[in-house]
Length: 129
Image (cartoon, rainbow, N blue to C red; front, side, top):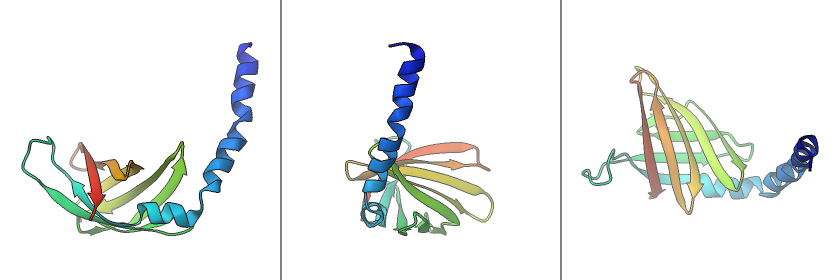
C-alpha cells in the first residue's frame, strides 16, 4: 500500500472512531467520572500517606464542576476517546492557577496537576472515596 493510500485509509476510519465515542451515553461518562475521589499526592509511594479530596460533577454536555484540594473548579471539561474517559480543569489557590487532567484507568483516576505559578507538575492517582 502506497503512503497516500495508507493515509487515506487511516482518515477513513475517523468517522467510525467518532461514532464509537458518541456511542457511550453521556450519562455513562458522567457516572464513571462523577463522585468523590481521594487523590494520593505523594511524590514517592514510600512517602507518608498524603491525600486530598476531589469532587467531580460531570454534566451531560461534558462540563465539569466541583472542587479539588478544597478549591472550586473554575472551568472544566470531560471527554471520552481511545477507550478512556478523562477530565481537565482549572483551580486556583488565590495566588496562582493549577491545571489538572486525569483519565479513568481500571477504576482509578490517573492524573497530573501543573502548578503554573509554582513551576511544578505532580503526577498522582486517585481512588473513590
